[in-house]
Image (cartoon, rainbow, N blue to C red):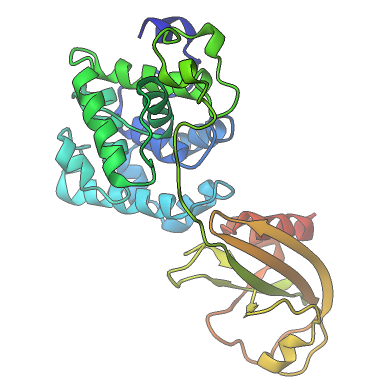
Length: 333
């Protein structure tokens, strides 16, 4: 905590005690770097100033503000949880750890962060930064991909936490991992724990934390068709339980294998002429997407599936996955 007092970064949510704003910042930072999440946080709380405003706003608006951050289930969960607070807690953010933990999209870490920062409850917030610091200092050579390892680290933090100032304790430990005990090139030569850090004394900084996890990558091939005629185009909403749920896209054909020819469309929708626009490779955590875009200067006589017609000028009002949003930006150009 002495180190934190001297070295902490100035962040827009630092020293915040409003549980709503702490909640928003923690959800954004779950899968996002601070420098990217900073402006998203400011825009989000400016448009959705409190729980009531967020709950009453259409999900489409929430997704639009979130556009570009990825992991869109976070935005959907925020919207759902805001409605839970309105219905179950009379619009007041719950002050009890267990009640906070029950909110949609909130796990042990986020519940502990909100509880300690907003209400000074002694729950350790154990994120990736904390796990890295603890495994290195104490020489924990257990697989951090296993829940039991995280549980043991959490219990160790419970013994250490400053019960009079748990919020600052959690922030200090997380901040130390974020900017000092970093994944690569930690600042070991200028470390307050250097004399008894196991990883430093054994030169195991690159070994700890130990993470053994085989990630199976799924390869998918998307073909988007951009129908343009008289300043109109067709889009649809992704409603299945898949990536980008509730976001919008152009009519899609997904193939099991890479297909370069634009002739795949007539096999599905009848005869028309399409022109290949571009191909983009897009990597997600467990999926690698090959996305091809085609332009069609005509319409179907009958709109199929859940497609609907919109003005090209109105495309900017719909939340798209970032990879499609770039194409939309080019079209509006």
